[in-house]
Amino acid sequence: MKIGDIVIRKFNGEDMQFCIIGFYDSLARGERLAILALLDPGYVIEASVEELAPISARYLFALTTNSYVH
Image 1 (cartoon, rainbow, N blue to C red):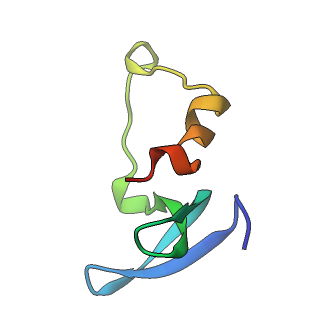
Image 2: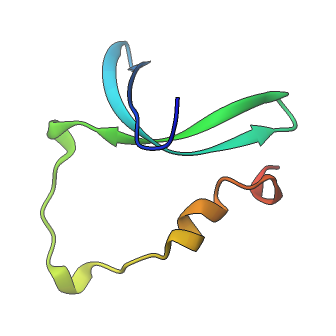
């Protein structure tokens, strides 16, 4: 699997679709974990563009480094 892949996982007893947005190695659990973004039409919202704040790719992918795993 790779970043951008769409996957299905059980969530609250039902299959939910997620997009993989990153990976990291959990030292505590001893396994590779995926960071997932929920893709569910039931959670689609609208917001004023003024309310949105862009984030950099550097910030997003910083979440996938071991330095952020506790």
